[in-house]
Image (cartoon, rainbow, N blue to C red; front, top):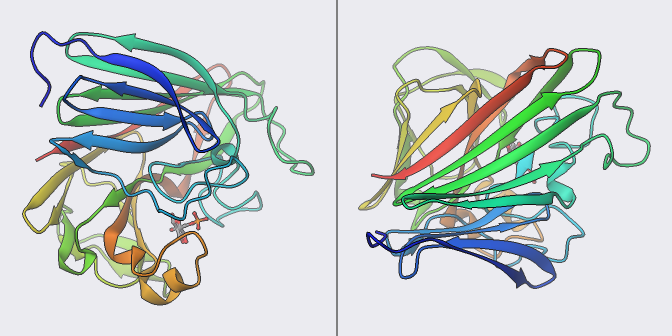
Length: 287
Ligand SMILES: O=P(O)(O)OC[C@H]1O[C@@H](O)[C@H](O)[C@@H](O)[C@@H]1O
C-alpha cells in the first residue's frame, strides 16, 4: 500500500534495449511500461509482482514481448487477414505525458497505426490510438482510446492481452460469469458453455462474454479482481505444457506461472464512426 503523503515518481529506465517508463510510490506500488508496444511489463502491488513476464521474452524491440500486457490491435489473433494480433504490439509508441496526482498517477502513450503498419499490409484507415496506464493503491487500469480521423467507419478487433503471474496455474481458477451463455473454445474450434468458474489448468483458449460484475482470479491464497468496460469479450488463454514447450520465448514450466485474462473484442467486430472515439479499459484490483 502507498503511504499517505508520499507523491508518485515518474522515471525513464532501460530494460535491456527497451526504453521504459516507471511510475511508483516510494516503498509502494509500481508499474513499468515499455515504449515498444506501450506494453506494461510489470505491476508491483501489495509487495509482489502481479504480471507474468517471461524470462525468455525478447527485449530488444525486434518482436512481440511475451508477457505483461500486450496491446493487440487492430485484429484479435488470427481472426482476419491482418497480421496475427495486429501490429501495434511490435512497434514503438510515442510517450505523451505522465500525470502525477496524490492518490493516482498515469502514463499516456500514443500511436498512428497507419504510419507504422508493416509493408504490404492493406489497411486504409486514419486513426490515433492512446493507451493510458493508471496506477493507484492496489489497482492498475489500462485504457485504450481509438479516435477515427478518417472519412469511413473504422472496424477493429483486438485485446489487452494481460498475462497474470500465478504461483501455480494447476491450482488457480477464474470465476464470475453468470451460469449459462455460450462462448467459443478455440482449442477445439467449437462453441462451449460458459461456466461460473474456469480452472486454469492445462491448455485453455476460450472467448467468453464479458462478465458484467467482473471476474476473480484465485491463485492459492492470492486473489485478484479483473473488470473491463467497453470490450465485449474476455479471453482466457494458457498454452498448456505441450504448446508452451514449443514456444522459444517461454521457459520450461512457464505455463504453470501464467494465465492470460484478456479484455478483448474477439467474436464481434467493433466499429468507430468517422470523428468518433471508442474507449475500452481493463482494471486489475487486489482483492
Ligand atoms: O503467441 P501470440 O501471438 O502472442 O498469441 C498467444 C495467444 O493469444 C490468445 O489471445 C489467443 O487466444 C491464442 O490463440 C494465442 O495463441
